[in-house]
Length: 116
Image (cartoon, rainbow, N blue to C red; front, side, top):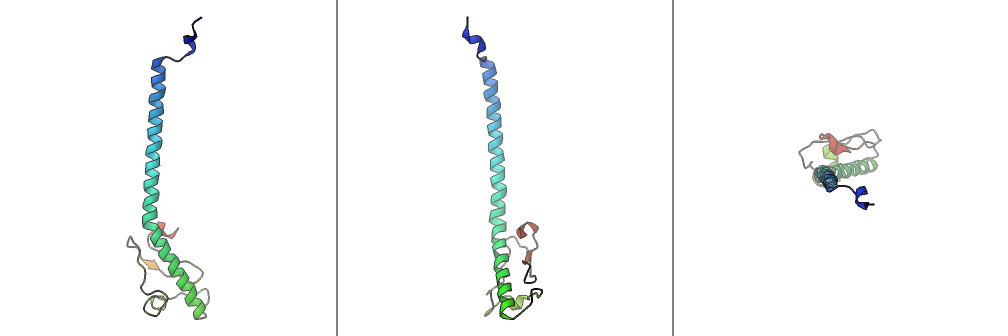
């Protein structure tokens, strides 16, 4: 009895390898795209989110120091400048505009995905 009848043919084996190579290539491509998208968000949105956090902490300190209620909203001159909580108003790295908010809410950037 010939044991070779149960083994796959060389043509079938090459087809399986070709399919496996295509699948592996597709997985690598999807991985590269995901890394690019995530790194783009990281390098542009993360500094903005940090600025928003710093502004929020300054807003909380302003409210505490001046006995403000949670619904009060500071102005730029309350928070930014010499002798204030932040020397200079931070800027969004992509040119977004920051909007101050009440003490209980975080400030916002005009670029939507920077507010996550």
